[in-house]
Amino acid sequence: MKRTWSIVCAVLTAACGDAGSDDATKSEASCGINTAYAGDDACLVPPPPDEGMQIHVGPKDYQDAADVDTFLLEPGGESSECWTVHTPNDVDVYFQTYELRGRPGTHHIINTMYRTELADGGFGPCQDPGTGTNPDILANLPSASRAHMPRLAVAPENQGIAQLVPARAPIQADMHYFNTGSEPILREFWLNLYFVPAAQVTDSPDLIRGMGGLSWNATPIAPGTRQVYSYACPIESDGRILSLFGHTHAHGLRETAFIRRASGDRQKVFEQYDYQEPQMFQYDSIATNPSFSTSSPGAHSGPLEVFAGDALEWECEVDNNTDRGLTYTNDVFYGEMCNIWGQSVGVVIDCIMP
Image 1 (cartoon, rainbow, N blue to C red):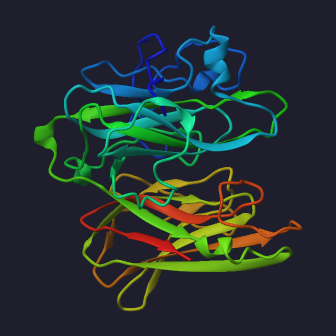
Image 2 (cartoon, rainbow, N blue to C red):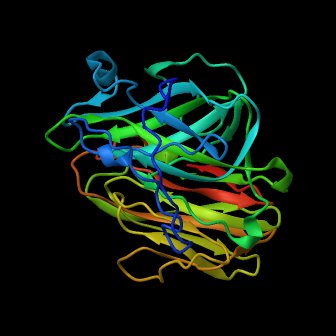
Image 3 (cartoon, rainbow, N blue to C red):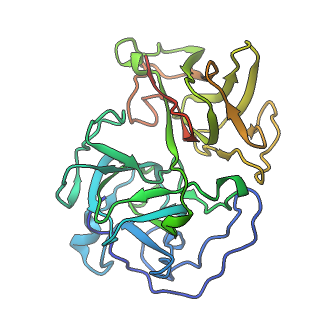
């Protein structure tokens, strides 16, 4: 991400919908931009300044060919690069809800705040190699494993949970895009953050990170094999899991997550089947998630408490039907990952697995 998150959309009047399920709070009206590229309707109207702020990575001026060319991805292209920018807030703020929209071709967007100063600029190497282990990382901003992450309603038990964004925080957007179409696309997204008063905040969310499959770089997944790969991360204190979302590539047939209790009981809490439709599920008193089936995504419904001695377990069924080995890399068709992400409160769940 870069200092291109100037607001290019005109402010339009829009209302939020009623609280409900996956799209608990409806999107703001689209910006009405008109370009030659797919996904103009993804553009978000920025919140009123007293209600929130917007981060936009994309052209400032769609009539400026050089500006647009910076974000172009040609047919057959794939890229995973970082864009650096500073947040627009001049004072510290807290946000609680958000909405993120990207144009078609979005595979993931990982937004990271840093303690150290970074220069705004174009696409380039990331400060962190995707592992989240850079000691200069301050915290994560909302990220995406699909083109639209809707704004969700806040459950009563979560009213005091919000995240701090320091004034003018340097951030990087790790943007993985691929273009399987016949026309160029734009690597572009809009992220709206909605403020809450500091006096309302009693806690901050922690990032859940479960990265599985790094050993595939040394021992690639062999061609012609179909296998389930399993991972586990210990839970060392009591808390609640607020959300989980999965991340695999083209050869991941299924991703399933469980909570293994200290007693040995195993509770399935998350499942998805399509890398092009990665799932994000909330675990609280108002979200009703789909039931589990043998072919469609599902999740536990209701608050998800965890306790010291439990473990987060996750597994991916991978079918390598290619003629080459698959490694842990940002290549949708010739790389593979088995990652589970999310948010928690009261507990840190963080593992990078071989």
